Length: 312
Image (cartoon, rainbow, N blue to C red):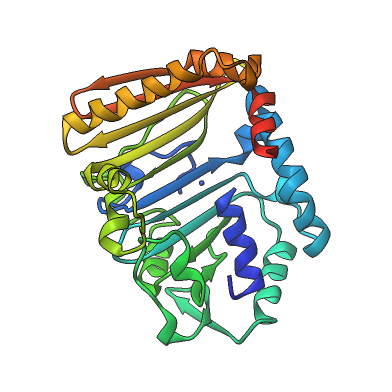
């Protein structure tokens, strides 16, 4: 990110939109290209997510606290980021952010360039960058926020970042929620659970259309080209992490083929002693299911093993 203060908020997003602890189809625009939702409050308060959050705190939060004096662990509860392909990226950070923190973020951003304060129906927002750098393309995550971004703290308990002024004004008009939320069809597939921690989804074929995907592997490109949408979920399952992924293919034969390959890979590694007993158990407990054009992959993992994987 070009601007330090904006980079801090984007970093939070990489780590949620309504007041709910998770998002649904109705919370996203009908032409969403990708989305990412992280419930940091549930992570740090839960048995399974607590270990993952502790890793995140050691690896990321501690550095932010030391460098800029902002404590995410007490001021950020959730983050949602998405792009609808027309208006670009939106990031919504929720939590009890203090005025001191908001002022610090704005001050950090001004060190990199001029700030243009603006107003919409009594609500203040800020533009950072050059008007010529505004990019409506939301195919590549966060790419359109690199040189120009709109920021507002006008909605209590939320920080709003958008790639276009129209998106910012729409959010301010709707109290920080997507205009028309819940009244449209066709949004991306969203997986949910009782104790959702992370949700993500995308249209892989959009990578090919936008030119952001480059692969010399015809098989790999064919998978992307034939995938309509994909979704990922991480949830707390009685102290363990439940991981679920779904791929919706345009062609049922492609979903069946990919499922067969994943099953084969699992069979090959199930008794590989070099993997270690915990990884072996993870591999053996992975379930593959194909119904028509939908491929589902699910497993349950011990949080300590997930931390080990993250460390590696």
